[in-house]
Length: 166
Image: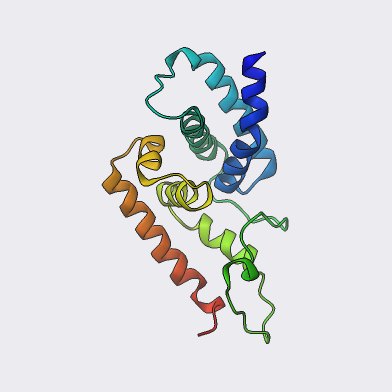
């Protein structure tokens, strides 16, 4: 019963993270299901050194990376729009003479990042974890975490620069 309540409480956030990592709804569902199975089997290993949410995110990230290595060489982007921030939400001005789907461009730019860069960026800026939490989830040093985020932001700025009017 208690584990069911944890599933209900954390499943939406885990799905959102898995979807952002995979860009595929079906894959995200599989990833979340597998992550909960792993959490159930390993609940006795939770050491309470971090929050339960961080522990679940670590399992979700690791499960997503394993899934993507096994099932996806290079993801083709689907026509469905993910829940990325739109131009209005981030204050970007788009040249009205061009028809640009910022959501699709952002998703494409995210998928061009390395796994480590994409994961660090998503955990920090979309999931709201601190640098220390992201490093713990990814099982890397805080310096490596900062570097992954720095490189990801730099690559995203370059990739999305043509979308932004100066």
